[in-house]
Amino acid sequence: MSTPTFDVVRVDEVEGARVRVVACRVPEPPFDDRVTAGFALMLLCDGSTGTVQLHQNRPGRYNVAFPSYPPRGLLDRLVSDEDLDADPSLAASFIAAVTERGRRNEDPTFHARGYDEDTYATIYGDEDNLFQIVLDIEVTDPALVAHLRAGMRWSSTAYAPEP
Image (tube, rainbow, N blue to C red; front, side, top):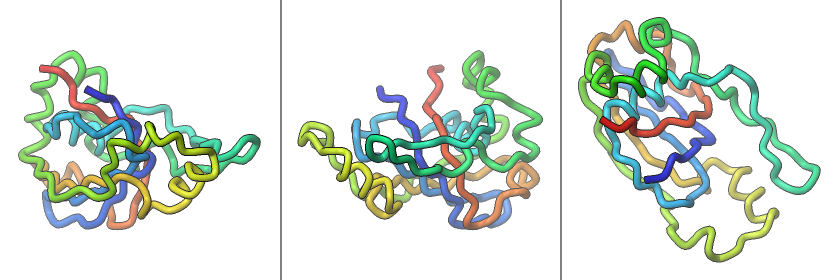
């Protein structure tokens, strides 16, 4: 099972207790993590340091990525990645359901083709070129996602914690 870094997590819509997010990354390795409540919870409240990431797209050339943390809200005060790693069943207290709505740009041979730095720069330079997974995440209480708005973006190291 891979532990991908999502270069962009974008909120497409928020409606009550449901949030539609699009998580994007380079299309390899193939995304084979289970789409679980724990994975969804980590996407919504990634326990990172809050720094801005720099991606080297060519030797000596960098793009500033989106902040490596989601906007802080109630979830961040109630649970951490460490809590979830210690007890993955905690996710059910916050995530009522997670549904995968679609994928784009899956390419299991991406890395094997030996792309150069210019190709990586092209892919990173346009979100539409990245692998995308669309998820509907329903939380147990609308207050948990009240701080999220369509268009918000951050990066994430979400994964499906083992039960």
